[in-house]
Image (cartoon, rainbow, N blue to C red; front, side, top):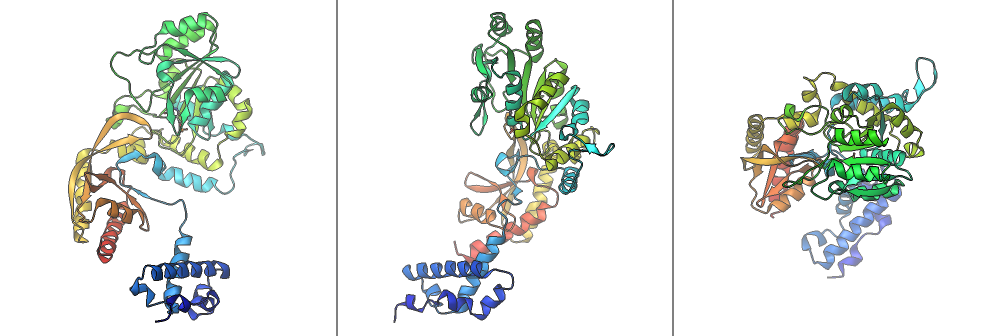
Length: 468
Ligand SMILES: *Cc1c(COP(=O)(O)O)cnc(C)c1O
């Protein structure tokens, strides 16, 4: 038999084939040529591996057209797309943290066209983007003024570079933390033009440590950083915001609190331990408090600074504010999310992050049973099991959420099944525990159950077809 490589059609021949004509109806010629080149490479590889099933189609134009059509379909899938979170980690950083409320999505859609972002509709003159969300944030936290930026990391840089540029900022040795993604407090201070004055020790820092540094005139601002993503236990001591404020007041130095989580209601309402809220720090007299928009607040990615009027005003005038500015879509989503907090009863139902956190194990078990029964109808063997989830997003470290999951019984290895689920039309991300793939139902959004059933059933069928 002659070398099959000589039978591979030329790209020109493929482009002139009847199948190509159909594909050219919604694809450019050079894009189609690339897709055919991809098919040719695949055929060459099959010839090298002596994969008879494919090699016998070496001169079949239809095989190339079908392969090219698949390549073109894949090229149309957006890079960033919807994923179903079945991990049980509510604020999953890799999956985009907080899922947004319908009200937020709608507001974002509307603002995405033209909006009054920097336009005063009353007077028909130029307005400021920094007026949006301010009233709501002040109402919710009791602060005099507020400022929204791109994210809390940016907000912290802005706050420090405003109060600490060319100054010495005192931070407890127990709070020189890495927030995540290599964002470390000592580096933030350095890049914000402040020099760090370490006070206390890793496990214990007392008022006297700040007091003596301030009395020596070594400190011109105090930064308190909430240990949101880890815990230290045992022989520990830290200084409260109100104590810091009184030290600050007696020496005329401002106190900034980097709080992180953005929780706007008591943890107890979600059956979670208490976490400090921005309103607590404001009540304690902090000059500025920094929180995140897309953690426990449940809104879009944003950084929020609330605090004293003249302090926030200085931050607005800081040139970095322009570099870290928030966009119109985010502001609209944040405003709509904050508005939901005005009704303390319905807010938990309306904001997906809060609703998921408040779900009770009994209700989750029921959902897992529903999912399992639908899967069994689709001939997918599975079992309902208790499981543990997490709040995530670097909040509530060590807190486990009692939940329920559907464990898929698949003989060919959980890794393969998990790959197949991630490759589906709407990727489903679960967790592999003890060599089995678990789908925790806590983090499923309304209406996703059907989609999960379809995707899992398809993955099982594909797996069986491939004979893995
Ligand atoms: C998460 C966190 C940040 C950073 O928030 P982003 O919105 O992710 O930028 C800053 N400080 C603390 C204490 C945090 O927990």
